[in-house]
Structures are given as structure tokens and as C-alpha cells.
Length: 161
Image (cartoon, rainbow, N blue to C red):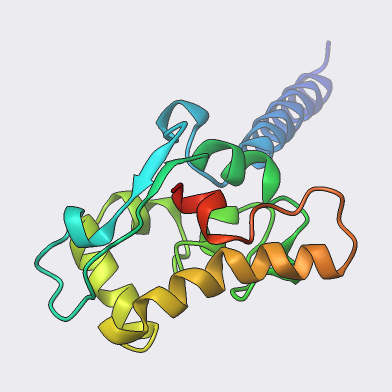
């Protein structure tokens, strides 16, 4: 084999390998790996971040919120119903308002993030409204659009009795 032919073969091999590596990289999800997403979580900011001043006492926490299912399944293709735009590549932004990456969510102190979100949402007295706008309004918008599975909209469906 001539030197030119060997060089061409080498370059084609490198090009193929580079394309395969790029395809693999692009196929990786932009969200946290599934192993890092909690299956379920309890939402009670007043208890978990009691240092956030001015929040009304939490009378109704959300127990057993299906975090992983929302992130991986329920939110996909539903951005139009959300109060906060997001992409299917990063559904976390539907609820973690303003987050641009998983690192922003997992890398910062949880209570610092929540304090910033509360302030962005209008302050402590508007916290309940903000949370309902994120969850309940999305579910209601889905119902209005005729979606067969839209999520709970009544108090005890999320908060229990």
C-alpha cells in the first residue's frame, strides 16, 4: 500500500471514530443520569429550609411527589402548558425555575436556590401562588387542551387530607 493510500485510510478511520464519538455524546441526556434523580420527594420548603424568612407556615406538604416520572416522562412534550418554558432535553426547568443545567440544581445549596426562587417568584408571601402556578396551572392547562392524563388539580389530590 502506498504512503498516500495509508494516510487516506488512517484519516477515514479517524473521521469515522470521531463521528461515532460525537454521535454517542449527542445521544446522552442533558438531564441528570437516571440513577441521580430521586424517584420521589417530599416538597415542604418551610421545614427543609426554615431559614427562608417570611414564608407562611406550611399546612399541606406534598408527600411522595413523583420526581423521576415528571422529569423523564410526564413533562416531555408538555412545555406549552407550563408557566415556565423548558425543553424536552432539560425538563428540570419546568419546576426548577431559571435553572439552565443540572449542575445549577445539584451544585448549589438547596436553601440558597430556594431563597432565590422565592424572591424571583415575588417574595415569601407569593410562594404558595408560585408553586401552584408551576404545578396546578400546568395540570389545568392540560385539562383545558383535552389531554387524557393531566395531573391533579384539587388540594387533597396533591396534599392529602
